Length: 207
Picture 1 (cartoon, rainbow, N blue to C red):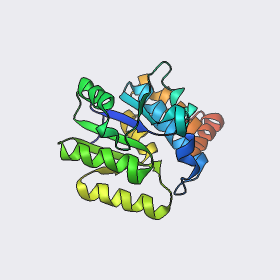
Picture 2 (picture 1 turned 120 degrees about the vertical axis):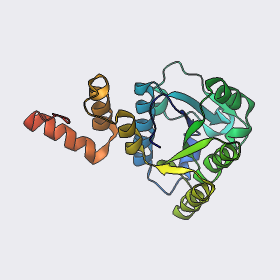
Picture 3 (picture 1 turned 180 degrees about the vertical axis):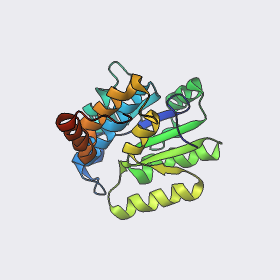
Picture 4 (picture 1 turned 30 degrees about the vertical axis):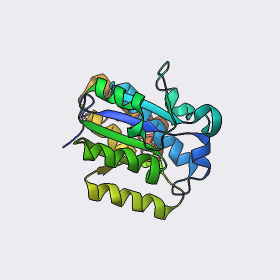
């Protein structure tokens, strides 16, 4: 089933400096852009979102500013547990939101995403993983983690897919400028294509 802005909770996990240093399955520029795209999409569409870190002050450092900038004033839930699903504050927030669909992204895929994905699936949640807004210490580690989650029932998707699935129809004019604006800023070559078409031809999707 397709996602809509009001039917799921997005959990962004451990997008922190120390975690990113050893991430090799995706380069840092793409990782930061994809994470920013997801965060700004969720914020713009009003998606219920949880931001969580691990040992922020003592070891891993702050969450990427590209994410926190999208959620000014949002409290970050700092943990000691590697599995986010074993943190009482996070689960209290999940339960308070009360949605049965969970979308995950973060570092590292094989630990910080596999843990909550498998735990949530076991408890009956429907889980989606934004594969290119995750990363691990090697391509092998990322791919094995993705396979393990998919075999358990998780549904993979990409960051740009997430944004466009929330928009769904270019005739939805209320979020059109926001969606294309996010794509222009963080959407790589697709964003450049939008800038070109609008600048050269005044083009607009859906017209």
